[in-house]
Amino acid sequence: GIGLVEGLLLASLIRVTGYLALLAGGLLLGGGSTLAEVRSTMRTSHAAKGRWHMVRSVARMLENQPLLNRIVRPALRALWNLLWWPAVWLQTHRDPHVALSLDVGELTVDLRDRGVAWPLYRYGEYEPDERSVMRRLVTPGMHAIDLGAQFGYHTLLLSKLVGEAGNVLAVEAAPSNYELLVRNLEGNAATNVHAVNAAASDQPGQLQLVVDPSNFGAHHVVGESHRAGAIPVRAVQLDSIIAERSLEPRFIKIDIEGAELAALRGLTRTIEGRDLAILAELNRPRLEQQGASAGALLDYLEALGFRLYSVSTEGSLVPAGRDELVSVSTRMDNVNFLAAKGAAVARAEVPGTG
Image 1: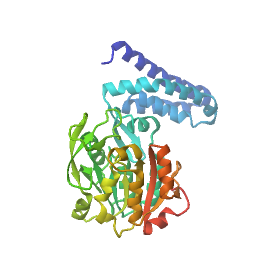
Image 2 (image 1 turned 180 degrees about the vertical axis):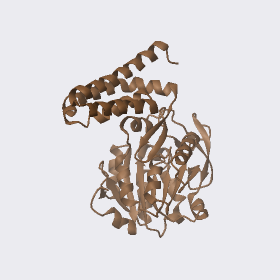
Image 3 (image 1 turned 135 degrees about the horizontal axis):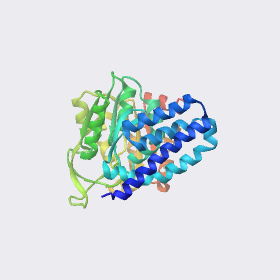
Image 4 (image 1 turned 135 degrees about the vertical axis):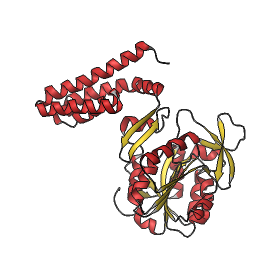
């Protein structure tokens, strides 16, 4: 638990930070209107989401000023970095579920998740390269699939991109992630998304899911029936669900920690003869744990007629050979790539980063 002294000390530090930001705005910017704006931001943010959100809101507003960029911004950033860890610790112990206002809407995350929730809480974004690819390739009216939807950060972007005329199938195996996913979909009125609580595989049945207590995006299926830390989850063959719902997907985002090849084998009927783009991850260690490999996954896609592309940190797409991607995966555990065929190839090769 949290001691009274520690809690009061941290709360006082955060309050002082807010007043320092207010003072900086008044002294360095001058003028009653700016000072009033700072004060209004503090009151609104504090009332809505507490002191920590107040400090972040004021700091972000002030650092847009040229003079503050040179003088106060480094000090504010240093103080932010100093208070980040204790603030997250305090918030996690008080209530790990926090609501964030992001570009896709209001998203509730669990701060016990250091893999995705922490970057979103601290920086307001996560995997901008992948999201750039999505914005480039997904268009209104499309049907899209999000495999490994977690709590819906990418799902909600896909929902907005396909619009009311489109549909998104979101698949998440972990029950706790799925609960947040449904909560975020309902909270953002994403009625064009159908969520499924299951693991995508090549055969229906049951699998064991190892739950990572500190990175909720790193949960992964295993073959052992009694693996420590594993829970049973339903396995589905997505071809059947897609046929039942009369979906015609043109875009698939898949990040399921090494189970990609098994999931794609369960999508063979959907993939064959279709214009399709697949944004995926080569997670070499996890693939090998499941008896697959980076080379086997890429071979499978090439055999179905896909062209391969590497994804840069800026989200641009560069044609890449199978051996090149395999080589990169031996140096990096996680490598994002795109596989495209049919009309999706033309969209992938349009110059620009999306």
